[in-house]
Image 1 (tube, helix red, strand yellow):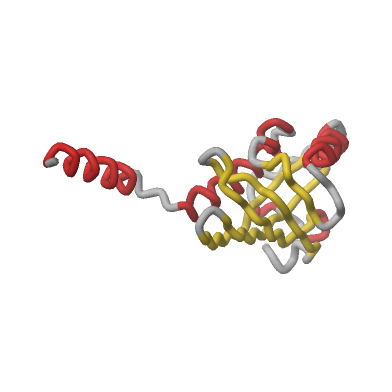
Image 2 (image 1 turned 60 degrees about the vertical axis):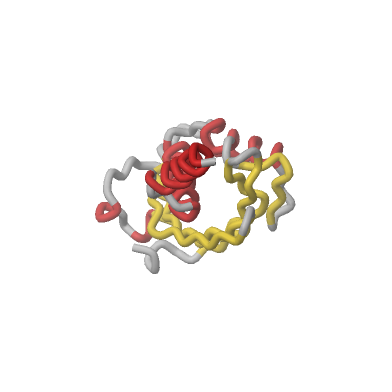
Length: 151
């Protein structure tokens, strides 16, 4: 009995010791997707998209691949800056809101180098669900809010 309590305690504390909350994991995913997008890495983006994905434009998992391919085969550079991410977890579902700035055509190393007229600002709301112990986006909405308000 005592060994079972010790084992259970170790499991609980090892889970807490890494100090990473589900909200932090979701924020990290948003940043990883942004990095993959900058690198034009379709698989890096799609690994966080559920096969059951549907969005406001009627896109599904396969349509997302086609859209990414269309945008990524263009010769222009894409810079992506995540300005803020908020995550609210309720069980195996989470609502994630992110403000993102996209700059096309020229490489931008820092947010301070962006000219508002050359960038687009978006507010995303994504629903994540836990699938096979990992978070995947199952739906999303976005709104063009202009870059000036996000800089």
